[in-house]
Length: 174
Image (cartoon, rainbow, N blue to C red):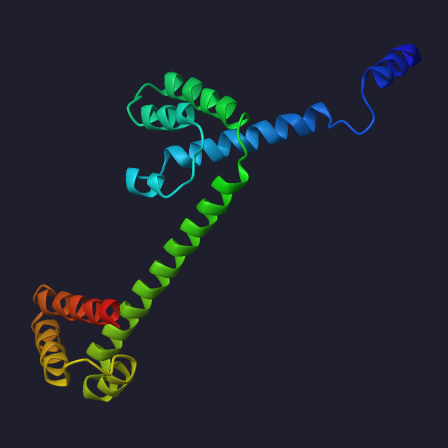
Protein backbone atom coordinates (compact mmCIF):
# COMPACT_ATOMS: atom_id res chain seq x y z
CA UNK A 1 0.00 0.00 0.00
CA UNK A 2 2.84 2.37 0.79
CA UNK A 3 4.37 1.70 -2.66
CA UNK A 4 1.06 2.64 -4.34
CA UNK A 5 1.03 5.95 -2.46
CA UNK A 6 4.64 6.66 -3.46
CA UNK A 7 3.83 5.90 -7.12
CA UNK A 8 0.72 8.09 -6.97
CA UNK A 9 2.71 10.98 -5.49
CA UNK A 10 5.35 10.63 -8.20
CA UNK A 11 2.73 10.75 -10.97
CA UNK A 12 1.27 14.07 -9.81
CA UNK A 13 3.16 17.21 -10.71
CA UNK A 14 3.90 19.60 -7.87
CA UNK A 15 1.66 22.66 -8.04
CA UNK A 16 -0.79 21.04 -10.48
CA UNK A 17 -4.44 21.24 -9.50
CA UNK A 18 -5.91 18.10 -8.04
CA UNK A 19 -8.43 15.98 -9.87
CA UNK A 20 -11.15 17.22 -7.52
CA UNK A 21 -10.23 20.85 -8.17
CA UNK A 22 -10.38 20.27 -11.92
CA UNK A 23 -13.78 18.60 -11.58
CA UNK A 24 -15.09 21.51 -9.47
CA UNK A 25 -13.87 23.95 -12.10
CA UNK A 26 -15.55 21.98 -14.91
CA UNK A 27 -18.79 21.78 -12.92
CA UNK A 28 -18.68 25.53 -12.32
CA UNK A 29 -18.18 26.18 -16.04
CA UNK A 30 -21.08 23.87 -16.88
CA UNK A 31 -23.26 25.73 -14.35
CA UNK A 32 -22.23 29.01 -15.99
CA UNK A 33 -23.24 27.57 -19.35
CA UNK A 34 -26.61 26.47 -17.92
CA UNK A 35 -27.13 30.01 -16.64
CA UNK A 36 -26.49 31.30 -20.16
CA UNK A 37 -29.08 28.85 -21.50
CA UNK A 38 -31.72 30.30 -19.14
CA UNK A 39 -31.29 33.86 -20.46
CA UNK A 40 -33.70 35.39 -22.91
CA UNK A 41 -32.37 36.11 -26.42
CA UNK A 42 -32.32 39.83 -25.62
CA UNK A 43 -30.25 39.28 -22.48
CA UNK A 44 -27.98 36.84 -24.29
CA UNK A 45 -27.09 39.54 -26.82
CA UNK A 46 -25.59 41.59 -24.00
CA UNK A 47 -23.21 38.80 -22.97
CA UNK A 48 -19.80 38.82 -24.72
CA UNK A 49 -19.46 35.25 -26.01
CA UNK A 50 -16.35 34.90 -28.15
CA UNK A 51 -17.01 31.42 -29.54
CA UNK A 52 -19.54 31.03 -32.36
CA UNK A 53 -19.87 27.33 -31.50
CA UNK A 54 -20.83 28.21 -27.95
CA UNK A 55 -23.40 30.77 -29.13
CA UNK A 56 -24.96 28.22 -31.47
CA UNK A 57 -25.02 25.55 -28.75
CA UNK A 58 -26.72 27.91 -26.29
CA UNK A 59 -29.33 28.86 -28.87
CA UNK A 60 -29.89 25.20 -29.71
CA UNK A 61 -30.42 24.32 -26.04
CA UNK A 62 -33.67 26.29 -26.02
CA UNK A 63 -35.08 24.00 -28.72
CA UNK A 64 -34.24 20.73 -26.95
CA UNK A 65 -37.16 19.36 -24.95
CA UNK A 66 -36.14 15.84 -23.94
CA UNK A 67 -34.56 15.77 -20.46
CA UNK A 68 -31.64 13.43 -21.12
CA UNK A 69 -30.83 15.11 -24.45
CA UNK A 70 -30.82 18.49 -22.69
CA UNK A 71 -28.54 17.11 -19.96
CA UNK A 72 -26.06 15.85 -22.59
CA UNK A 73 -26.26 19.14 -24.47
CA UNK A 74 -25.51 21.08 -21.28
CA UNK A 75 -22.46 18.88 -20.75
CA UNK A 76 -21.41 19.76 -24.29
CA UNK A 77 -21.86 23.45 -23.47
CA UNK A 78 -19.68 22.90 -20.39
CA UNK A 79 -17.02 21.36 -22.63
CA UNK A 80 -17.15 24.39 -24.94
CA UNK A 81 -16.94 26.70 -21.91
CA UNK A 82 -13.60 25.12 -20.98
CA UNK A 83 -12.11 26.37 -24.25
CA UNK A 84 -12.82 30.07 -23.61
CA UNK A 85 -12.10 32.62 -20.91
CA UNK A 86 -15.20 32.69 -18.66
CA UNK A 87 -14.26 35.92 -16.87
CA UNK A 88 -15.93 38.41 -19.29
CA UNK A 89 -19.07 36.25 -19.35
CA UNK A 90 -19.18 36.09 -15.56
CA UNK A 91 -18.67 39.85 -15.31
CA UNK A 92 -21.49 40.53 -17.77
CA UNK A 93 -23.81 38.10 -15.95
CA UNK A 94 -23.06 39.77 -12.63
CA UNK A 95 -23.89 43.17 -14.13
CA UNK A 96 -27.10 41.76 -15.59
CA UNK A 97 -28.15 40.30 -12.23
CA UNK A 98 -27.38 43.58 -10.47
CA UNK A 99 -29.50 45.41 -13.03
CA UNK A 100 -32.36 42.97 -12.40
CA UNK A 101 -32.09 43.47 -8.64
CA UNK A 102 -32.09 47.26 -9.02
CA UNK A 103 -35.12 47.05 -11.28
CA UNK A 104 -36.93 44.85 -8.77
CA UNK A 105 -36.09 47.26 -5.92
CA UNK A 106 -37.38 50.22 -7.95
CA UNK A 107 -40.57 48.29 -8.76
CA UNK A 108 -41.11 47.48 -5.08
CA UNK A 109 -40.48 51.09 -4.10
CA UNK A 110 -43.14 52.21 -6.59
CA UNK A 111 -45.57 49.65 -5.20
CA UNK A 112 -44.91 50.93 -1.67
CA UNK A 113 -45.45 54.52 -2.80
CA UNK A 114 -48.72 53.57 -4.50
CA UNK A 115 -49.90 51.70 -1.38
CA UNK A 116 -48.95 54.68 0.77
CA UNK A 117 -50.88 57.02 -1.52
CA UNK A 118 -53.94 54.76 -1.31
CA UNK A 119 -53.64 54.34 2.45
CA UNK A 120 -52.86 57.94 3.48
CA UNK A 121 -54.43 59.88 0.62
CA UNK A 122 -53.52 63.57 0.38
CA UNK A 123 -51.05 63.28 3.28
CA UNK A 124 -48.80 61.03 1.19
CA UNK A 125 -49.20 63.19 -1.89
CA UNK A 126 -46.38 65.43 -0.66
CA UNK A 127 -44.00 62.46 -0.54
CA UNK A 128 -44.85 61.53 -4.13
CA UNK A 129 -44.48 65.13 -5.32
CA UNK A 130 -41.18 65.44 -3.49
CA UNK A 131 -39.93 62.30 -5.22
CA UNK A 132 -41.35 63.33 -8.61
CA UNK A 133 -41.43 67.16 -8.72
CA UNK A 134 -42.46 67.15 -12.39
CA UNK A 135 -45.64 65.17 -11.64
CA UNK A 136 -49.07 66.60 -12.35
CA UNK A 137 -50.52 67.13 -8.86
CA UNK A 138 -54.12 67.18 -10.03
CA UNK A 139 -53.84 63.97 -12.05
CA UNK A 140 -52.05 62.21 -9.19
CA UNK A 141 -54.74 63.28 -6.70
CA UNK A 142 -57.51 62.23 -9.09
CA UNK A 143 -55.97 58.77 -9.62
CA UNK A 144 -55.56 58.32 -5.86
CA UNK A 145 -59.18 59.21 -5.20
CA UNK A 146 -60.47 56.92 -7.95
CA UNK A 147 -58.43 54.05 -6.58
CA UNK A 148 -59.65 54.72 -3.04
CA UNK A 149 -63.28 54.71 -4.23
CA UNK A 150 -62.71 51.43 -6.03
CA UNK A 151 -61.16 49.89 -2.92
CA UNK A 152 -64.07 51.02 -0.76
CA UNK A 153 -66.60 49.63 -3.24
CA UNK A 154 -64.73 46.32 -3.55
CA UNK A 155 -64.26 46.72 -7.29
CA UNK A 156 -61.28 45.40 -9.29
CA UNK A 157 -58.23 47.67 -8.93
CA UNK A 158 -58.24 49.31 -12.38
CA UNK A 159 -57.55 52.81 -11.05
CA UNK A 160 -54.86 51.44 -8.76
CA UNK A 161 -53.16 49.97 -11.81
CA UNK A 162 -53.47 53.28 -13.67
CA UNK A 163 -51.91 55.02 -10.64
CA UNK A 164 -49.02 52.55 -10.66
CA UNK A 165 -48.50 53.03 -14.42
CA UNK A 166 -48.48 56.79 -13.94
CA UNK A 167 -45.88 56.49 -11.16
CA UNK A 168 -43.80 54.16 -13.33
CA UNK A 169 -43.95 56.64 -16.23
CA UNK A 170 -42.86 59.42 -13.88
CA UNK A 171 -39.92 57.33 -12.71
CA UNK A 172 -38.85 56.50 -16.25
CA UNK A 173 -39.05 60.15 -17.32
CA UNK A 174 -37.04 61.29 -14.29
